[in-house]
Length: 206
Image 1 (cartoon, one colour):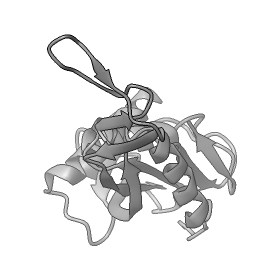
Image 2 (spheres, rainbow, N blue to C red):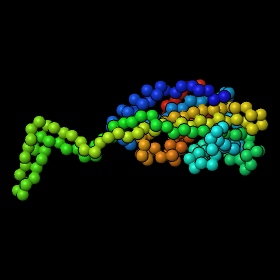
Image 3 (cartoon, rainbow, N blue to C red):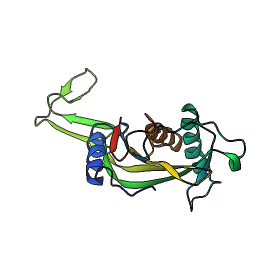
Image 4 (tube, rainbow, N blue to C red):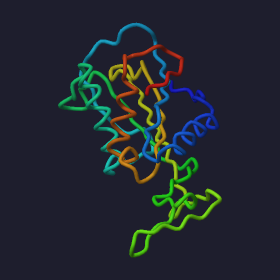
């Protein structure tokens, strides 16, 4: 049921994060969300969370994303099934984290030369060098990571897929926002906002 529908073009997403990165390396990016469903309300019930085909259910990172999805569904009234075999619904969860580019890292030390930019001496005398030159020390680049999460909700009884969705965001590596727990909570929260959402369109959640 989950169709591969293009979210915002990657060039546009990269431009967004690149502009943000020039201002600060810690600004969080938005989340792009696309959902499909059969229309109408989805009655609450018990749910079992499992990995999509091919992903390991035992890894700590998968459990982080699965736990974030379970928490969001519980908030909506879908209680965790005591026995997955008797759950009303099955939610298949998949995720991916991947590098998508780099941003410039602001230099932590900036030195300006000109108009008395250098001062010192035993009597506090200053030496001014004209030209208004400024330069940074210790700059460089930071890697940008994209996080994708997909969730497919199906009825246990007849295996009909009744809802599926995808959420994508970007963050700068080695920042708090890029940590798996923060990313899992962020994409899961955006994905289930106003559940089930409008089918077949992409929204941007800031």
